[in-house]
Length: 200
Image (tube, rainbow, N blue to C red; front, side, top):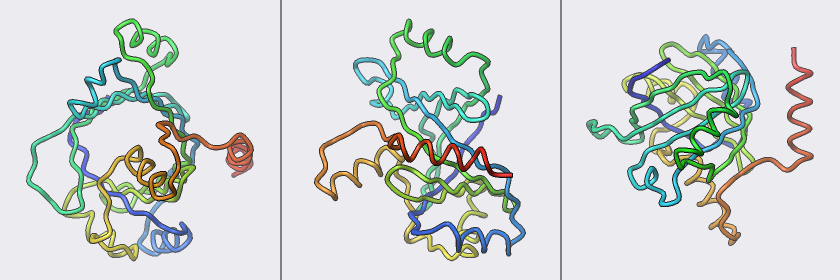
């Protein structure tokens, strides 16, 4: 189990290749590349969302349950701070059923391919989502800005929105109807899973 403050920021990127090159040049270490399935739960009244609380089940190589809550912290431009409690679970279907008995049901599902790098004190995640490419840096507040600069990114372009919020913005810009979940089309999902299975 892990518990503590999560400090992070996001950037929208057009390609991961320049970032990978910059990470390698900075001594970054590739840790993993995995397909993720995420389920976010809430009750019928949306009481968790109303309190800015996230309850999520994430499946990749393992399954984790995560709770994120607001935290009072000094404002730092471009950075988002949340209290995070996370632990692995052995039977995600049973846990989802248990949450259902308590009134917490899935209201949002999303998928992504996450490539994770270690760069000094920070984790850098390259996230391919159905609606775009994003880079996330998580680590000590004082380390995030300098690392972003080494990766060719400016904190002036940093994003603090959740992927759900960014997806809603994406759909509004394209005059698309509202859609809560964001998952890959079946063909894209099969292609990504095949690529990951074939990777060394």
